[in-house]
Structure formats: structure tokens, C-alpha cells
Amino acid sequence: MTPVRLAPLLTVVAAVIGLTGVVAPPAEAAPPAPAQPEEPWRLSGDLAAHDPGLVVGGGGDNWYVFATGEESKGAGNIQIRSSPDGHKWTYEGTVWDEIPKWVKDAVPGVKNLWAPEVYEANGMYYLYYAASTWGHNRSVIGLATNETLDPADPAYEWVDRGEVIGSQPDDDYNAIDPGIVEDGSGTPWMAFGSYWSGIRMVQLDWPSGKVADPDQEPLRIADRKASPNAIEAAYIVKNDGYYYLFTSWGQCCQGSDSDYKIMVGRSKKVTGPYVDRDGRKLLEGGGTTVLVDQGNRVGPGGQSASDDIIAYHYYDKSANGATRLAIQPLVWDDDGWPELQNKD
Image: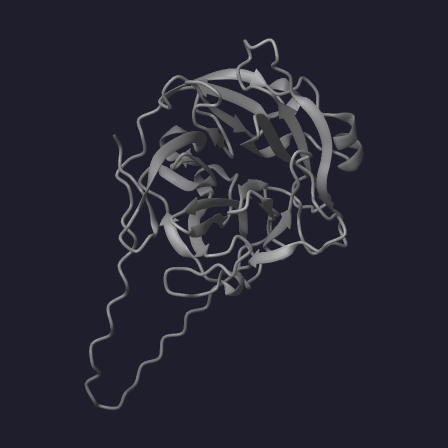
């Protein structure tokens, strides 16, 4: 998803050699890197989907992926792709033909809409999306609704519902990258954020889909506590009594030079505190690695999930860093931590 671009930090590693004449004991072995899937599902068709918002079986047999817009397609509006089985994907156009005027007024210079999330509640589909400009936090998260995801249905129409939350330069957060989850009582929550103060959260309200209390300060749920705080793309998955907060760390949108990776922590409460496998709090820089570079697939991130299937984008080094869609099943180990299943 589209973060601030700041110069990467320089890491200084100091090696200290003790000349005591005493043979030092062997150093402890570094913990093994997490097992990585050999290959995502073998996908075909139009796979140029950045920040994929996945919906498995959206009101029928078809799968849908909503993705960040491009100026060359539908004037920068959210892109739509469909598939009969999750493997072969077809481009289906964009949500609208023009970016809504209120968005252009709220975010001068906006060129495209980012990081969509589609959530179904009570028979209605809620499409959340972000509008911002590169490197700034004058941003908004907007909302559109539709009774169906099938373009052939006579009821198909994306209705603009306006702003959900915004941020200004004097705010310490960035209102982009929405991710929706309902708690055990059916109350909806939205995680969001990028750089600045990390990942924040607000309570929503059904059926409006808007913030329940606009005057309430967004909760803090994850922060790397190290400049430039490259954490974003929050998405929460419920499983077996836990809420799992997936985030993307690092730099996206740099083609083969991107260094995104997918991280996770969990909590018994939707509002946190979230901790990683080693018990470190996500608010204090913790995070367990889920996915990193594999061969020509670099910078995986911008994730979403639907029915224990995770979608993310990566950059294909064998195709000059082109954006590619990837989809894999989520499985859970004996300790309840998520892993990505190998190719089918």
C-alpha cells in the first residue's frame, strides 16, 4: 500500500573482539527462519493487482479481487477482477469512471484510489478505500456500498457514501489502508494507518459503515518504534479465539527494489494488546514473520484474507519488477500461528 518514502536507516553493526586468551564458548545458533511456501497457487490471466482486497465467493460462485487504481485505467478508480475458481483472473473494469469530487476536494492532487477492502455485512457489501498523495498524510478513507458484486445483476451499483475518516498534516497518523473486522458481538472495527504513529483502530457502526464516535481518538495497536516506522496494510483475521493482526513492513511500490514482508501478531481482544510468537508487544516493535522474498517474488505484502485464503501482491524480478497477484490458503500450526500453504 502506498506509504511515505523516507531515506532508509543506516544500521551500524559493531564487532567486538576479546583478546583474553580464553576460548569463548560457541555462539548460540540464530533461530531458524520461518518456513516459506515453495510457490503460491498457480494463477493465470490478468494478475496486475496491487493491494488486493479478496472476496471468496462474493454472493455466488465467483471470486473477486479489488485493487489499487491506475491513472491509465478508469481514471485511477479501484480496479475489479473476477475468477470462477481463484486461479484464472479476468479484469472487469473499475468501480467508477471518475474519482468522486469530494475526494478531489479533500485530497488536492489525488491521482488514484488505494488499498481497497470489501466487507459483507447484513447482505450489503461495504467497499472501503484510501485517497492520498505520495509521502503525505492529508488523506481520507472513503466508503461505497453495493447490494451485489455481480455486474450482471440489475441491482449492481456502487453508491458513494462519502468519508469515513480523514487525517491532516497536524495529525500523528495517516488515514489509509483500511481493514475491517467484527468482534464476537458483531461490532465492526477498522484498523488503518501507515508510517507516522503506526497502526490505529476505530469502532464502526452498522448499517452506516461509518465511525461510531468521530470525536474519539483512534486506538493504537501496532508501532515499530523505530524511524521511519515502515508498517502499514493492517488486516485482522479471527481464528480459534484470537484476532490476528497482519501488517506489511518495509518499502512497497519500488518494483524489484521493494522490501515489503508480511508480519503478524495476535490478541484475545480485537483492540489488543497484540503480541508476537515470542510475547513481544506489537506496540513496542514486535512482530512474527509470515512471508518474505522467495526467488523472483520480492516484496510480498498489501495483504487481505477471505475464508482462510490470503491474497497479497509481490514484484516479479523476472518481469522487470511487475506487480503480480498471489493467493494461498492460510493454515494454523499446533500453537495457533498462521502459515501459508504451499502450491496446490
